[in-house]
Image (cartoon, rainbow, N blue to C red; front, side):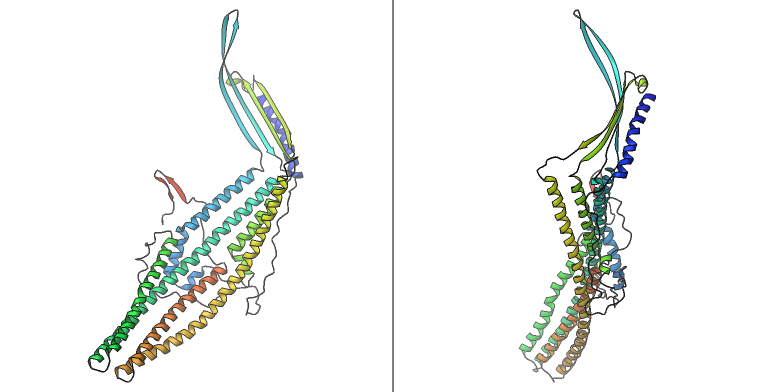
Length: 496
């Protein structure tokens, strides 16, 4: 098709120089993003300033030394529904980014048509008709020059949005791992407390039986028997509440892994020790938070995105120029296209200038600036919240360790006292009231020790979460979480 090719070459001869000129001369409206510098303290409160040292956060839950917990964390990462949603949002952000890049490039479309036509002419009362075919092929292209960078700011905003969605996934994983670890520790804690309550109740039942025997011998009263049995029953009455709390923790774990609430009941039925963290924990300096906490990173990326959107709104206030061109060929025979055919082409710029819009475009700029201000405040608040969280977690963990030592000493003393009181009671050298009081105190002290061990593990988990510790393994965000089958859409993960 020599004629068609000459026309296309002529159009492109106009198009390409204009394309290059626009690339060289274009400017970008709006402010350029600069990451804000926030003053950070050099050390945690109560600690001497130390050289910068990153926190050891990789796979922190493994330092709880519990293989079952490690397995549950991996299963939760693979099966949790919040993680699936976060991965879908990343794919959405990537697609939006590709869309925005497309606005920087020319668009081209090809067209072709074939029609069968009939025309009728009447002369002296006689009608004659002619039937003929008509074929047409064409090519058209257009390109917005983006002189003031509206599309480039759109790409920039989409890029920051993609970063934010990736940090959102990291934040979801951080929360998920912490929740799995916390609920697992709570579940093991309830199991230990249930075992203690039953063991203590059994011991108190033995005291009640001894008191009943002594009452038959005349060395104790019916009131003594009632008191001993009442204390044993009171201890047993606490077991159902502990069982319910244990069940809730296991149900939460099951849902966190993407399963039905009762899925882990049999698997976790056998009690194991409360996970104990390996201490001490290096925390680094507060500035580490800005490099590790995904919620802070996400807030900063959202602030960057909102800054780029100011440029989009600014560019809309200025003139826009686009180039459009087309070439077409028409013939009565398919083989004549581009040869013995009619060939036409057109090319030229289009200028659009906003003259009057009732202040809408300026208002849109003001809206974008106000939104930028909100995201800056949110970013600064995220940093301050991160600092506060780490300070609180550090204090809680250190003070709970001190408290646990005192509770362990107290529990040993109360245990020794209870054993001694029972021995003296059998010998008739002390009263039942002293025995019951000693048993009650010993049980309460042992239960407090168990709760404190749970608190130490929970505070350890909280500290790692506040420092930004989470899953650092590979996450496949490219594979869709939902697949369509004949019966309808379903989750693709095999763990569900």
